[in-house]
Amino acid sequence: MKRIKITVMRITEYHDLMAQYENPIEHACNMRLGQSFIVEECTKPEGMCDSAWETLLPFVSELAGGGGNFFDGWMRNPHSAMLSCNDGFRPVSFYVEVIE
Image (tube, rainbow, N blue to C red; front, side, top):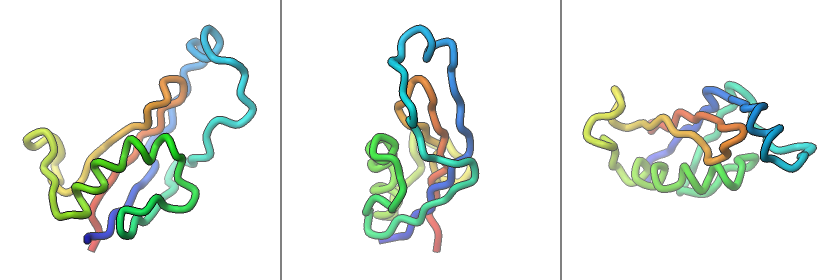
């Protein structure tokens, strides 16, 4: 299996949606801009958010197994993907890529 690198590229917060719909949360996300994780054997890296991992795992698995070229040429590098976690209040964008 190929090794995969996941890098936090952007962290966004929708304060208007939080104020309108979300119950107060003291600590919702541990991700930091520029933070990176190395994935070995499709095992969730230490410190990776469980919810984000669930979103990323199908793409990580495909890339680790040698696949790629998602959605017929979506990415310039066919062995990568730009993905976001499923938190509608504070989505985090991740760049997922094969490393040698």
